[in-house]
Amino acid sequence: MLAIAKILKSNGIEGDVLVGLLDFDASEINTEEPVFISFDGLPVPFFIESITPKGSTRAIMHLTDVDSLADAEELVGREICLDAVDDDYDDEDFTGWTLYDRDKLVGTVDYLEDIPGNPCIAVGDALIPLHEDLIISADPSTRTLVMDIPEGLL
Image (cartoon, rainbow, N blue to C red; front, side, top):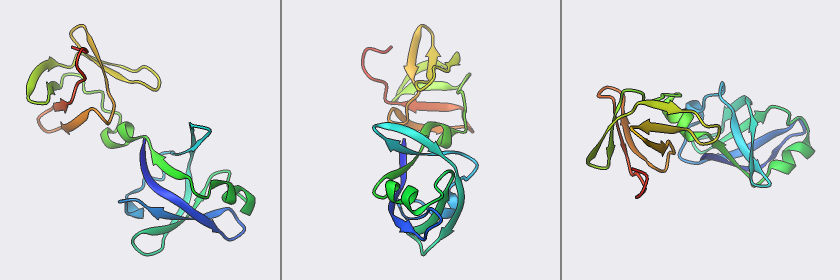
C-alpha cells in the first residue's frame, strides 16, 4: 500500500473530509480505482466520489458511504492508501519480460501466479513475490523488470 493522503479533519456535515496530500497532486488520483483506509489493521476499500483541490497540498474529498459528520470524524487521522502494485503497473503480469536481480540476469518470466493478496511471478521453478518493495524498476519499452530478490528465493 502506498499512502497518498492523510485525513486532517471533517469538512461540513455531509461527510466531506479535508486531506493533506503526501507527494501527490489531486489530479493524479484515479477516482475509478478504490483507495484504502485501514481499520484494525485491515485495508477497507472506498471510492472517491469527488475531490476538490485546496491549494497544492490539500483537498476536500467525499468518499463512498461517508455521509455524515459522525462518519467523517471517525476517519480523522487515518491515511488514505493506494494498492501500489496494481496502480503503478496497471495489472501488468510481466509474462515474457526479462527479470534481473539487481544487475544479475535471472531469466524470462514464465507466468503470473495471481495469489490473492500475494501475486507472484514464476521464473523456472522459482516463485517470486511481486511486491512494490522488491521492484526497483520496470521498463515496458524493453520489457525488463529489475527487482531486489531476497536471498534464498532463486
